[in-house]
Amino acid sequence: MVSKSKLSLLSFFVLIIVSNFLIYRLEIMQPLPDGIVIATLFDFLIFIPLLAYLLVIRKRYSLKYLSIVVIFGYGFVNLIVPKSQLSSYSFLNNLLIACEGVFVILELYIFYKIVRKLPKIIKKYRENKSEIPYFQFRLEKAMTFKLSISRIQEIIVSELTVFYYALFSWNRKKYLDQSNSQLFTYHKKTSAIALYIMLIHALILESVGFHFLLHSWKPIFSVIALILNVYALLILIAHIQAIRNCPFIVTGQSLHIQIGMMKQLTVSLDDIKSIVYLKKPGVSSKNEIKEVFNAILPDFIADDSIIEIEFFSKQQAKFMYGFKQNVIKLHLRPDEMEKFYELISSKVNCKSK
Image (tube, one colour):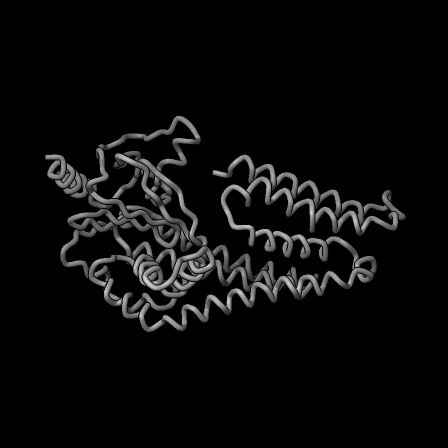
């Protein structure tokens, strides 16, 4: 769900884009005053970044994300303002190059830190094979062991996970080798895989048509759109492979949940308060929605029955690119619901005795 602050920022952003676009395109607005470009620059390089900081960045994210908003604002300026009027403000190109340079230096520094400690990270990753179930989880633990994890490093982990599942997970064993664990698939009794394959098919068709349309207008935009579509295609393929290769895992101490590429949750069995069957589950408020980890795949014809697990305290769920959320309940529908229910119930009851 989109928060009110993000929705407000998006509304202001759309309003500013549309109003500035119309100013430069409508004949009724001609001739334009001399300072109109400066007003547009103020909107996109100062006003929008300031709103982004006050409404979103200040509450949850680092100040460095403000520069990303500035770069995107500069991109919109180039799209909206005619080149003939923007040419007298050539210093903006130097500003963009400087911002990009800062990001490149930061990324190179992080890459240097990772490469310098890569042998130890690989060694730790291999040691975690028997105790940590999923590729992304093992990679994060290995990197955290030698590095203080940051949002950029979490993004790097997510990117490596995408390429791993999309390109290198085809010849591996059907499921993870967990001799002391019990595995539960969650996709075989759904049409989720078929749904994602349909999305891939639609994405490919849309990419071809949209590419030629953009190429006839501005070739550079067609190249950017093609790159984004290829990346989206990789994410969908990786998501399918991760669903197939990452079942729910119940060990002697923990329950591990990973839903494809998108989200994961690991919770100790000691933190499980109750497990119940639900028919047609409902939520009463937006706050309750935020506190539920939904581990149910999309389906053409969804089964109403699910399993709900409630925790004694809030657990931290992880999402793609390092986003996190605290949850108090878990909704899931494994293929073997009765077996899963009996297993968790027995472990929870044993712990409570």
